[in-house]
Amino acid sequence: MSQRQLRIGRIRYLNVLPIYYPMESGVMGRDFEIVYGTPAELNDMMARGELHASSASSIEYARNADQYYLLPDIAIGSCGPVMSVLLISRKPIWELEGETILSTAQSHTSAALLRMLFRDYLKVDVRYETGSVTERLQAGDLPTAALCIGDEALQLRSDGRFPYRLDLGEAWREWTGLPFIFGVWVISRKAVAEGCFTRDPATLFVRAKDWGTANMEQMVSMAADTGYLSKEDMRTYFRGLVYNLRRKEQEGLVLFMQRLAGAGEIPAVPDLVFYDHAAMVPPECLTERDDD
Image (cartoon, rainbow, N blue to C red):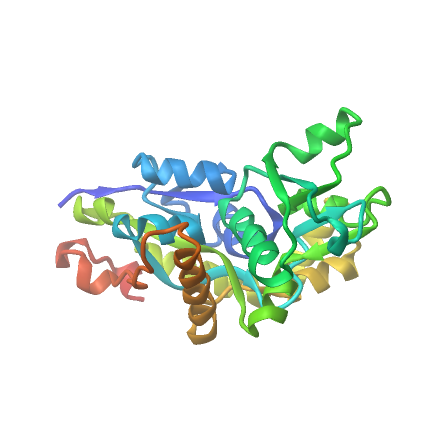
């Protein structure tokens, strides 16, 4: 059976550097293709069949679990302050009643979490509009409050024009006591059914994650070169991130989906169905590298 080169999606944020640098640098070989985009763009590419495996917003899995398998033991989340999913505000958070929050279109999960926190945890009634925070600021049109994610959040977290902040990862942890999983890694069920890949995606991603987290000081130095944060702050940033999808992380993910369902944002809570390379592909697809 002929093999296909694995096409994988990569969000353009520093938080996934420990997972993707080993792939981009050649440490994990080069028999795969990396495609770049925002979380929302990668979700759309997966839905259109343009990628085989990718990071995906947690809400994308919640909405379309029948199209995907989860890759085991890999995720992106936090167990406390996440620093890069941040509400910045010109007014105290408790005084935002009746105000409009500018919400990024780049991450559906972060926007859903923001709505959930204001509605069910903070119990502050606000309105939302979608748009680019950076473009609004460049135009001199300062929103009262704005949801920022990724590198944009790292840049704006100390902006004096917005003295009040709500870290969404920290708020979730205070509310539930559980980690929050912003993104998971998935593989298309259709792609699995269509045949062999040059690499086992589950093995590739977990090995890359293990290499990146074992060489975290190198990741910190590379990330600090962007100038967003000092080296020490970048070290703190990476220390607060979660890259595993084990029992506690799965509990946090399921609770998020249960609350999405309770709010009518998804019809039902899907099962967590994990990809099993050995069980799901024909024996002729297995390679020596996969079995190492």
